[in-house]
Amino acid sequence: MILRMSTLFVRTLRDDPADAEVPSHRLLVRAGYIRRAAPGIYSWLPLGLRVLRRIEGIIREEMDGIGAQELSFPALLPRAPYEATGRWTEYGDGIFRLKDRKDDDYLLGPTHEEMFTLVVKDLYSSYKDLPLSLYQVQNKYRDEARPRAGILRGREFVMKDSYSFDVDDAGLDASYQKHRDAYVRIFDRLGFDYVIVKATSGAMGGSRSEEFLAKAEVGEDTYVRCTVCDYAANVEAVEVPTPAPSSYDGVPAAHAEQTPGTPTIDSLVDFLNEKLPRDDRPWAAGDTLKNVLVVFTHPDGTREPVAIGLPGDREVDQKRLEGQLEPITVEPMDEAELRKHPALVKGYIGPGVLGEDSTSGIRYLLDPRVVEGTRWVTGADVDGSHVVDLVAGRDFTGDGTVEAADVRDGDPCPRCAETGDAGVLVSARGIEMGHIFQLGRKYAEALDLKVLDENGKLVTVTMGSYGVGVTRAVAAVAEGTLDDAGLCWPREVAPADVHLVAAGKDDALFTAAEEIARELDAAGVRVLYDDRRGKTSPGVKFKDAELIGVPTIVVVGKGLVDGVVEVKDRRTGEREDIAAASVVDHLV
Ligand code: ATP
Ligand code: MG
Ligand code: MG
Ligand code: MG
Image (cartoon, rainbow, N blue to C red; front, side):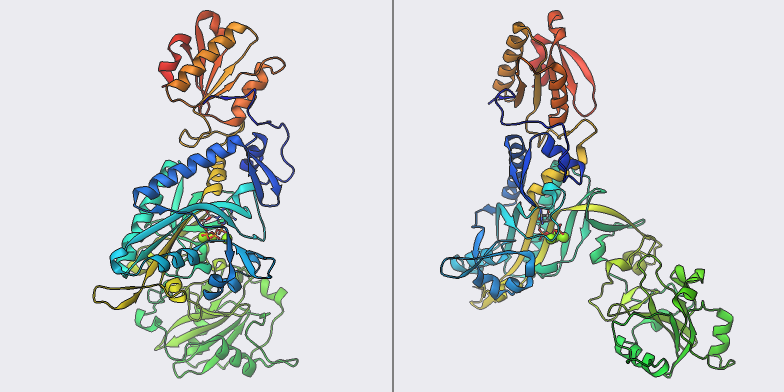
């Protein structure tokens, strides 16, 4: 079918939409691909829908290729299954909830783990039925706090979500790997410059998890990668190395292990209350510390404050350790005064003293530990609730990770730290395109999905969940390929292969263009033919062709009298004259 500009339901716009935050959003609206219906909710016009469908097509091929089977669930879902897994509450304001006329609760599905688990439970009962992978390409609804950048973060969006079901962990590993490989093929085909990073699993639960991030400055995710090894992680998920290979001078690995008596928030708060009592109320976890307090912990467990707000001095520290100096008096210090010490701005500055992170403003309560003459440093983020080994970067109280804010360019790479290599982390921005999780048995347990194993024993099924943002992919491909003149689609996802422009007034020219359009169409080339007559000038047609972004532009114009048409590559801008008679062969 030939698309004709004279009848195509499209109006290209000269002006940028007022709410456009990123170039892809601006151009998708101006080129007539999408229209905003409500905040974060978009309608798809014919050109946009074609791109969306092509991306869906690629995803379907790769999903079918690993043996996943497509089905489709409703978006309107009952409360009960989400109640059973705790997500009705966990999602908070993040989901759309509604009531039917009988006052029963429903939600618009943000993701469908529950429904897939239940349908497998309904129909399958034996290990012989597994492994199984199911998927759908379907609208999802999330009441995003900040819908953004057009379809990049919508409140209604298309997601491909798939789910794997296995009887044991080895099976789940295999299913996960298959999906991972399929995702690599999908994103390669979509032409993304992407990176696969370690991720957290968030509201999904589960263990192993990776994200596919398109490298893009406009992305909302920050990831780090190592300068030496292939370590890459979303900053939300950087695992902090165990303290063993501390960078702290002279600390034998053995001493850096967490030892009994490692300070906790509570013990540090106790300490503060003892050494720095306040008049108004006792210190509590979460209090903001106005000063940096440096404390030595001696091997017998006694703690000694050595400085407040002052950089450490090795010699002085050493003398103090050897008992040659009187214990220091603890005096609160004014924050403004504190900031005058340049060393405090840098973070770690030497034995016994750590400063404040001048960018995040996070202050640490310090506890340089003394063990057999060597020391290591722990600090408590008093603004939060973590006790962190600031040298090795280990969180003793959290889940083994430190918060994003804690990862900075130049920090040691956690994997290299284990192998003794010198890699450091560098950060960049990305758009989350896909996310794969090993869910494990969380959903199967909550919804009681069990099958009989080889021995006739009931076992809980283990699951994986795998998502690709399809509408987001449209925006991200656009974002990654556009130029000053407009959109610039890779051939695999373009709404047409050839944008044929009849540039002139003569009937002969339209007759020739029409014939080229028909022949291309017959040869399976998808043609968008600008057959507009009358007022539309060649200049307007050229501008529209650039804006719409079909990869090859063919101009039937002035050259026709000499028997040639112009073939232009939208991306490179290269033009060549081709004999009109052979242009179809040239393009097929
Ligand atoms: P984000 O961190 O961007 O909010 P997410 O981690 O909440 O995404 P997942 O639950 O992992 O998203 O969903 C799988 C995929 O769905 C994501 O990798 C992303 O490509 C897509 N997606 C998620 N939320 C949106 C949205 N609001 N608009 C468009 N696509 C989305
Ligand atoms: Mg989200
Ligand atoms: Mg995310
Ligand atoms: Mg995610």
